[in-house]
Image (tube, rainbow over all chains, first blue to last red):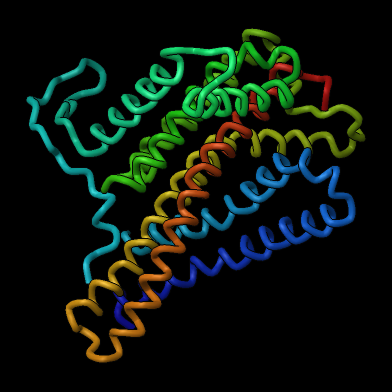
Length: 74
Length: 257
């Protein structure tokens, strides 16, 4: 395989790490919705926690994306 | 198709002579598009806040209530996360929040997003963690290191916990930097990729297949732009929330966990 092709495939593989972030963010919002439907009056006070949790989970996916970009432009 | 990464290139708009700074070496002072984007963001914030407070009334009008909402959002945030001392740290959080918000939004209206440059977001991350360190050492002296020793941990686990806490503290500026950078860059790359599909189909590069491709891609660009507005606000908000949480760790060290 040519090194150039291997680099592009590697960059693509590196971004697969975003699958995990997708599962994590989906879990957070899904569970928030499930909880919010059970107790809607408590939902508004937890919006801040919701977005912090989503941001923390998302950061790991972003790390995979940055790694992909680094390999792509290396 | 045009290179979707081209939009992130720094271009010199006005050439200025290089200056030699002692200790740093040669520094290029040229005014770049990144420079212009950040200055515009600054001008927009100062202009907006000046306009909002120009004729303050007891019953706010439309413009004034937008400014008050923005102000109240961050005021609530510092108050609820840091506690009654929160108002001391409000100016810092508000400054960072508005600057990031303005740069994110201007990136959607103009051609260049300052927050998609890792140098800009790294500066914000380093600044935030620097403020946290300074406040921590100023308030608690060497007691600052209690941050890495949570209370109520069995002594057998303590070395491992301290190591994990220390590493996670070191990673805070890195994740702050990369989250903002990655979100802005990823969003704008996706926008440009779909816009590129529309452009290719419009010049007839795909033949008759171009009609459905162009329609779907155009719909996608519209939807993604709407999403990017949400992300632009959300990332600025998340940056502010995390800044508050990190400040809270050192302000209320040892209690309130």
